[in-house]
Length: 368
Image (cartoon, rainbow, N blue to C red; front, side, top):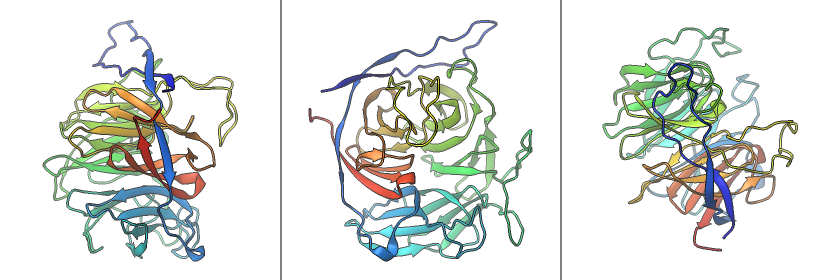
């Protein structure tokens, strides 16, 4: 089996004292996981996908695809993109569209099913988190959409505006703990985690905008685009701190526990699918996604933009046990993975954003 150096998970508390700097994390060896990309969605010429940002799967095996078709039928929102939540059955047959004409939609960033098969949509432009019951009716709205007849805009400023309890500023994702408390990664401008109870009542926030420091293992609680969030059975909260190039792990009260890094050696001379070839490229790559399996032993799957890999991480240890894929345009390659659904440790549904498609992956961890 092919081997490649990948990241050791570094465990840190608040490590900087005086002039002491934490050392950069060291890489280690782990296997490449073989996989197949298999046909799933049964699309027709009148239902081509556009920008695919998210994917979620419920207890029946039905898959919801978050699609941005890029037309102006819903009005001039965020560059005239619209949002479609398209449901397919367990065999990939189209079932219905969910949430048509919902006021809380402008540019939905992620979708998740909770354990009750309610569907949640997190909209970074409308500043909302919307909960739908299994029939597709709105049950709950968190946040508040900016008013205005023609051009909603992000609440941007330099420095960013002071966060307001119960409101969002570029929210990205949602997760729940064992008591059904709600956690929102609020994401592009507030750069924090917002916590609500199961009724949507405000509890607290933690985190603030800020860089990691000289190394990625400094300044826990500083976020630059907390892009995805997930919670395991041990009630650890995992936040993909994308632009700080790390996953931060907290307890459910926001106390920092450790970092996980994707400092995977890769061919830095290989040209990115999108973007110029930089003179220097960091060892740590950017974690974009969080998906946690529900089997007897839990794993976390995450992905990066470049070199475009998916990583399988053992929980709760945080040990990276393998990787798969690379960036590109062919099947089995990815052009910005923006969302992952992981019904089990060997089946993944991948929102392949800039390739305008959903890929279903079957992993073969024992295949050489």
